Image (tube, rainbow over the protein chains, first blue to last red):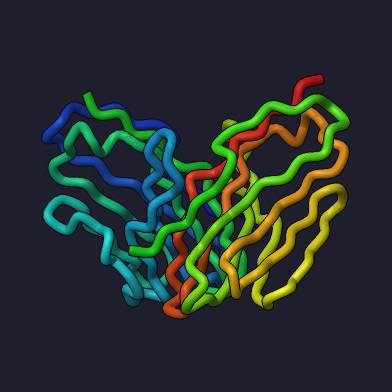
Length: 113
Length: 111
């Protein structure tokens, strides 16, 4: 089966600019996660979708981050405007149901100048 | 605030050595404990999903145990090989299906 697809792999922007990441989960996976992984730390959950509904977005900085999952399949994560501390790897993962293992994409490495 | 801790943070072992790491998590509202292996330049890969107290899982030379009452899980690697070099992450799943990851244990196996 095809894995979780993410794009772009790398992105460099200046602070205060906007950026968007895209994720295509494994076909049939109802649960989709976006994580932020800062160097030296474990992945931090930003938002979790169940189909196209939000299950948990308690750690999403909503003043600058937004995410959507249209039609319960693909998802986009946007940062507007970016800050220096947003430099991180952004991982997308999906699972069939929440208690199954998560399948991760290769991530997007974001650098803010 | 739920806290998931992993130890050690990093370690180097010689090829052929056996090693183990610890994942500590809250002992209340437990739902599941996941272990992942994350190799450099690749995406994290699931190793084990553990749900029951006393669970023991094995995959080749890697095995894991779970104690939900005291809030810890051990990951063991028998006869480490250079290809085992990676970051090993545990993720604690609470009753609300929210997963919290530890900071990982970075393993380097020296040939």
